[in-house]
Length: 127
Image 1 (spheres, helix red, strand yellow):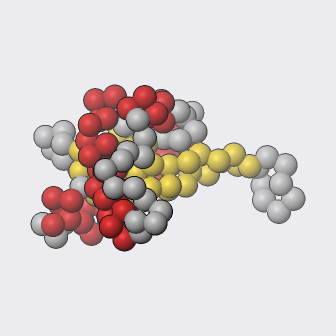
Image 2 (cartoon, helix red, strand yellow; image 1 turned 135 degrees about the vertical axis):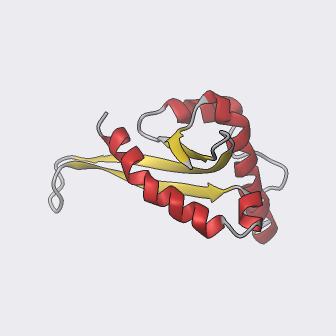
């Protein structure tokens, strides 16, 4: 499994994953989520992919198929009384594609994805 920054070519796969999440949310909380809608437009997703403060990573298999995503938020701390100045990268949203989950590989995929994230985060933080 390879972890890398999301690119324009990942738009369809990430949108498919976001749709799976939205479907689950709409089923569980129809008072908050509208079925059959999209969280982001294509142009919004592309802008997020390009934003250095909100990096999105994808996990892909050996054939380049996207198995999951991880939306992150980069936060900078400056001048706080209780914390040193610094940068942190938070996970905002993490999703593994339904098919690997159904095959029982979700835990393995998430574990593998998360174990490889520090190197990807370090690259994002060093910019």
